[in-house]
Image (cartoon, rainbow, N blue to C red; front, side, top):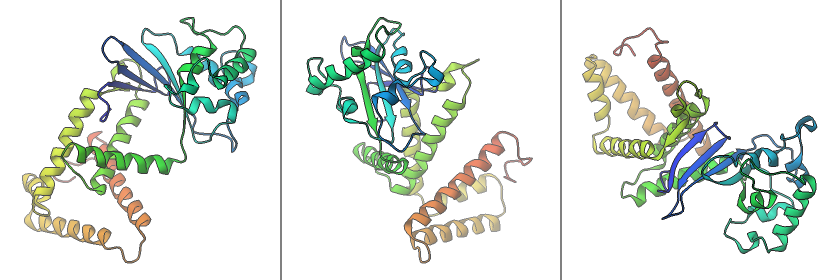
Length: 299
């Protein structure tokens, strides 16, 4: 959503694992992309049989039936399957961009897959009356290689976006922003639909506001002398000067250590940084939730 203006909002664990709601170009109207994410998979290629496999032979429980069944709301529907395993040749057509010539109904690959699915599900239709070929035309199979590859790609994209907007950031603060984004998504996914469904939806207007605010904070912090922002906050809390001085010294020592690794390789340094960030966020969450019997100064 930070990159794409047309992406209006994202639902986390509502009508599907993920729902992307877009505002189309002039006259195109709104569209919803229903995304299924397959986190646990067998160590083999995805096949049409896997796509069609029902749980305990119960109608409507296969990956394909569930995906087509999402086509029930007023927005125009598209579909996406995200997997770590690649697909067999029969499904390869789904991995091409939706506007690829191979996705046309007249193409051999498209027709072959439609025929195979139609044989397995001869009378199936979505609640809006669309058939097998509609799903084949509008589904994108998103093959990913590993969670680590996705994380690194997101990190690079975040750094590039900030630079493109004229507010460059380094990789370390970008990693912190990614942690916040992942936490935001997880909280939305864990939230209950009742009584407030909006907690499960992240809007672009909110995210852009968050992004601008966080970049401003990073820029202001970088413009301050080392420890300046930290000392200002601690002085505002009326902490003794020796405590403020010790905190600044510890902060500088930590920064020096992680930037000059002597005994740890870069991966270990990154793991240490993530652990520190995780511990700080955990403590702050417990403090906000009232689980730590401390006042602000003690915290």
